[in-house]
Each structure stands twice: as structure tokens, then as C-alpha cells.
Amino acid sequence: MSLILGIETSCDECSASVVRYQVDSIEVLSCETFSQILIHRPYGGVVPEIASRNHLETINPMITAALASAEISPRELDAIAVTNRPGLVGALLVGVSAAKSMAYALEKPLVPVHHLEGHATSIFLNSSDRPPVRRNEIPYPMLIAVVSGGHTNLHLAPAAPELWPLDFLKRSLVGRSRDDAAGEAFDKTAKVLGFPYPGGRWIDETAQSGNPRAFDFPRALPQKATLDFSFSGLKTAVAMKAEELRKKGELESRLPDLCASLQEAIVDALFTKIALAVRDNRCKSLAIVGGVAANSRLRNRLDTEWKSLGLLQPPILPEMKYCTDNAAMIAGAGAFRFRQSHALRGLDYLTLNAFASPEF
Ligand code: KG4
Ligand code: ZN
Image 1: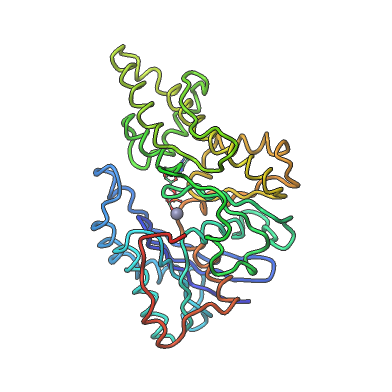
Image 2 (image 1 turned 90 degrees about the vertical axis):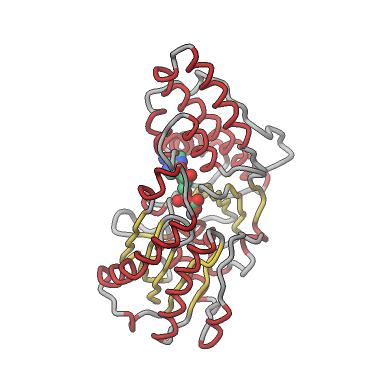
């Protein structure tokens, strides 16, 4: 058993969490998150300078609240985990500095965590809301699709995270987006249609009453020879269709059809490549993680079509609250690395830095 504090400040969520690592579960004891979405909304996207300044104001209250609601004193922690890449460097540095100072003052090991490894292990988090996903009972290999605002990657996991090498993300990558991420495609098209930032949730909601076959938007890279994605053409196609409808005075009334059709194009592209990757690599299980895993159409298609993919069990998705950025997934991923003894101790803390790039 280990108690890990996680800290996440890579973009516009300031989050701290305490998890209890056990052999068959990662129990989330607390997860306190301050979302800056409303602060950035007037600018139509995240403003890096505003993000880091806000993290500075909220990081200490989040850490204090996470420890208090977990009823854990800082001395009881076994390690402190923090996201140090990828993300906005100024924002990351706030979390990294807070984690370094705490680890130094408390003489605790410090575990740097790759944000995408946090998403990838988010399926193993369990709170009281659902039974734990037992990682040793999952049939491997498992395909992990990371579909977030910044990334669309397909990773092949040969075993449970305790056995992942340090360069797991690099070694396991079998497909990725060549341009925009799936979440970015949602956000950019939503902006064109006048929805507030971040737009994925609004498109999802508006699409509920629309016809997904009303408009035929492009599905890029349909060739079976590649597991890569491309979403950058979608924004232009949606913008042109929206302009055409606006001129006819039909934009407002066709908005649900437009949202349903563009959502279908994104989900279809994701589904097609995921299915191909599962078959090519003879995967027995599938996990979908990241903000876009919250999408209802994607969840729906997985529910109804997973058997046709040849999987031995239904796809595993994180609980809704652990799809978007949160510190519980960082604490969880940190726990796996801590158990492998990949932690910085003593003066080694001073070497830890923050990096914008994912470095695959
Ligand atoms: O994982 P995340 O919180 O941040 C990154 O690490 O990038 O993902 C945020 C992304 C945004 O692009 C947001 O629009 C998208 O997840 N998102 C959704 C939904 N909820 C969040 N996209 C589609 N449907 C949703 N329901
Ligand atoms: Zn994320």
C-alpha cells in the first residue's frame, strides 16, 4: 500500500489528489480541481500567461483541500507525483515548483509524470462510484486510445502498468494524429459555429437532436495502410457548410444536424482506426481515455459495436470525472512509477524541469 499526492497544472486545470495504491486497485481518496475554463472563455482558448498566474493563486488551496478531504497528513504520504510534460511550460512550472518544495520540506520522494501516462492509467482509478478495474485480470495486449484536446494517440500495452518501461509511450505508439487532435477538431469547429470554449461538450449536447447523416463531412486517411489520423480538414469543411447555411438563413435551424454530422465524422475516423489497430495487433482489450472519451456518440458506438472488433471484453473507459484533466490520474501514474523505484530523492530534485513537448 502507498499513499501518493498528485499535482496537475499542465494546462487550464489546477488539481491536487491523494490516491491509495494497492495491488488490485488505485483508490482515489480525494481530488480537488479548479478549472480555469470560465477565465479563458472570453479569449476563445487558453491564454498561457493567465493560466500560470492563476495556477499560482490556486495551487496551495488545492493541495491543502486534497489532503484535508482525504484526511491524510503530509507526513503520511509515501511520495509526491507531478506532471512535468507536456503542456504550457509556465503552467507546468507552477506545479513542478510546488511539488519540489513540498518533497524537499517533507523529505519525500518526487515522481515526475508524463501527462499522457496519467490519461493512459486513468482507467484504473476507482472511487466509490463503480467497482475497480482489476489490472491483472485484463486480457493483454490492450490498445489504449488517448483522445484529448492536445493528443490523439494509439498505444499498445503488452501488460499492466507496473511492467511498463520508462519509455513506454514512445515504444508503444502505433498511431497518432498528423495535425489536429480529436478534441482540437471539436473545439475548432465549435468555435466556427459560435459555441463557447471548450466546444466538445456543446457539440455533443447539440448533436443529440440532430441527424448524423445530414451532411457528409470528410474522413481523412481512409487507407488501411496507416493508423494515423488527420482532422485539420474538418474545420474548413464545416466553416464552408456553415457559411452556405448562414446565407440561406438556415444556420440556426440546422445547427443540430451540423453538430451531429461533424461529430459523426470525428467519431467515425476514431472508430475506424481504433478497429484497424485492434485487428492489426490482435488486441484482446481496449481502453479509451482523455477528454473526448466523455463523448456520448463515441461511448454509444463502442457499446453497440465492440463485439465486432474481436475484443474479449467491453472497452474500458475512465469514470466521466477522470476523462478530462485531473490530478488523480497523475497520482495513479506516479504510484506505478514509484513502485518501480523511479522517484527522485534528495538533491536529485534540483534536476527536475518542465517541458512543453511530449518527446516521443
Ligand atoms: O483530456 P483533456 O481534459 O485535456 C487535454 O489533455 O487536452 O481534454 C479536453 C478536450 C477538449 O478538446 C474538449 O472539447 C474535449 O476534451 N471534450 C469533449 C467532450 N468533453 C470534453 N469532446 C467531445 N465530446 C465531449 N462530451
Ligand atoms: Zn489531458
